[in-house]
Image (cartoon, rainbow, N blue to C red):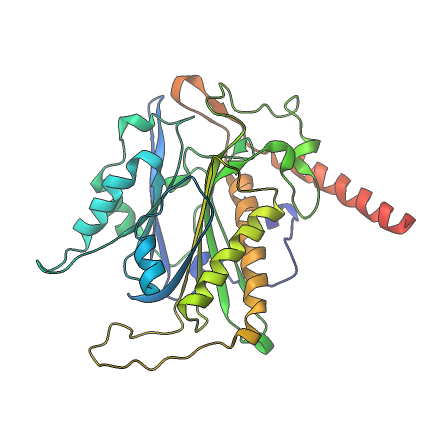
Amino acid sequence: MRARDLGIVIGSMTPGPRNAITDVEGVRVGMTTLIEGDDVRTGVTVILLPEVPLFAGFHSLNGNGEMTGSHWIRESGMLTTPIAITNTHSVGVVHDALIAAHPTEPDEWSLPVVAETWDGLLNDINGFHVKPEHVFAALESATDGAVPEGNVGGGTGMTCHEFKGGTGTASRVLPEADGGYTVGVLVQANHGWRHRLSIEGVPVGREIPPERIPVPRPARRPPGAGSIIGIVATDAPLLPGQCDRLAQRVGLGVARTGGTGENSSGDIFLAFATGNRGLAGAGRLAALEMLRNEHITALFFAVIEATEEAIVNALVAAETMTGRGGATAYRLEPELLVEVMRRGRASTSNEAFSA
């Protein structure tokens, strides 16, 4: 189930055919989901590029988190490896597995990009259950088709705005007058306070108190402590500085749903552009195209809308999950969400008419 299945349409732009990051040609996503016994609720998500390197950019809204390889992206403007997202304490093993999966020559090096969010509420995070073979399986399973959402991949054990969260994705296709470019976003959503959750301007979190859907129990962290990773892909011909600017706009999509980049949250975003290829050629010079900055604003809107919808998709797709020590994160019930949205929209319309 996704937001649009419930009649929740985010923004005004048109999604791609899959409404996913894989709408950007050549981008593939793979996952391994680990649900075992009472305590294992984790996994890994990988995003494969059509080729490397590609121009890329990076932004940290709040840096209580990790994305390896980001210093080299900032320095060189290049993304040189696949991207993986997992839990906080599995960054090392996933990093090593990506290198093993793409071995280099003895005099070469690799700086894989691995990002994380903390799933220790539901998952035995210190059990180190993600192994190299799980990364290899995610790489093998990667496709350019529909992307699973909710309790899958790296998002398996995550919570969002004190509901069950996880993996979500969405896309937007610009009108031909704006270039016809595609923008896709994938998030691993593990952030936010319930009372701040807003969808299309409706204060959903305030309308669904714990009496109707309980907050995760037992709570092992203060409300609002968490993180969100956002990955943006586009086929527009952008340079690294422009990719930085797209990555920044993920934060505005997070804010539209009520995220604020709290002190204890790792809100870290990466954007890459496939519009310039052949950057690894042997020649001294590379022929490039660049979208003029005067025409980039439509891409900003696309990132913001796709980010907001990806977060909502993660919430809608997620299922109630019980994990370590009996801790339970409850789903945002679709029927209740529809009720709240309908009531909120009617209230907004009446207020506008009265004004």
